[in-house]
Length: 360
Image 1 (cartoon, helix red, strand yellow):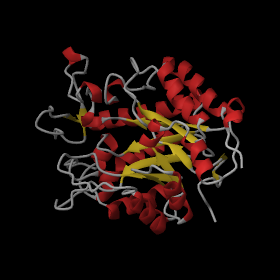
Image 2 (cartoon, one colour):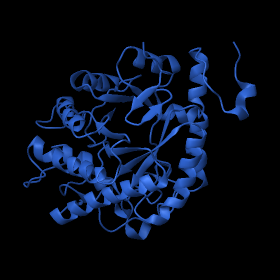
Image 3 (cartoon, one colour):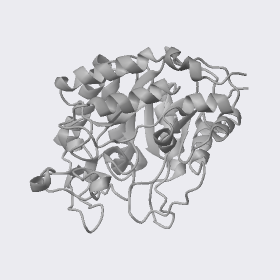
Image 4 (tube, helix red, strand yellow):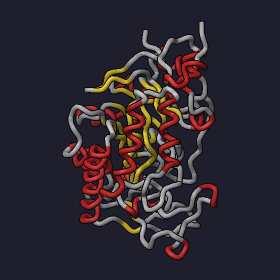
């Protein structure tokens, strides 16, 4: 029976266990450049026993950042420090991954500890934000500009170039961010996509942009390295005539599997302020289970997964193939090591920490 510390082979890579460090924005970059904070943040989780460490949502263009503090990969100069991070992660026998993202209409905001407010150019933000349709996030944010067809082509090219740089930087897994109300999710959901052209309306049209981004990335990304896609499995707007739903996520996952995507990272929500989420321990895991059951694609479970036994139970019962852990890794950077102790699994520790390893 598979369990939390069973290895998992995806394409040419073998993950030493099923524990993934979820991409978590740190809002600590300047002009997109990684720094010592990112090295220590990501590196310590690799030391802590995770099989896969995914760098935060990394913008494919300056205007694609959520905040001025987001990581970026839109220019070659970003790569030098990223290589330092990926080299350190790999030296800990973990796999370095990166989440490529464009914030869409949720761009140009301050860091959470500064209020998470829209920033004007005078406040350090940028003049123009973009979305599939000119629908503001809420009454306190400006309406975004509707992407033209030429601008859509540019965004696809930005993702393609970002994938090329990610490979050059030493990343071994790419996750495409199509969740949480950012640009790709905005195209998927009828709540935020009112386009009358080939990128709006029908399910086929609303998924077109994501599939074209995927195809662009695959022009640069080796076929033997894994590709993940993070989605919001539902908008959590049940009373809307049309929204993004689990049924549509299942249909999308079926297509993604045929297109060479290896794993769907199953999150939810984040698109509209009227969402009605019912949080609780593992509350999003049923989405991973349903998508896995109906499509056969690998899935990652994320959301209020906080203990070793909970994580192990998800894998043992076949609800998902990997557990993607965020806030618990902020509380305990060494969650992988402590989880092995709780589950009585014998794993390698960093030799520098061996003297502290619990003995049977």
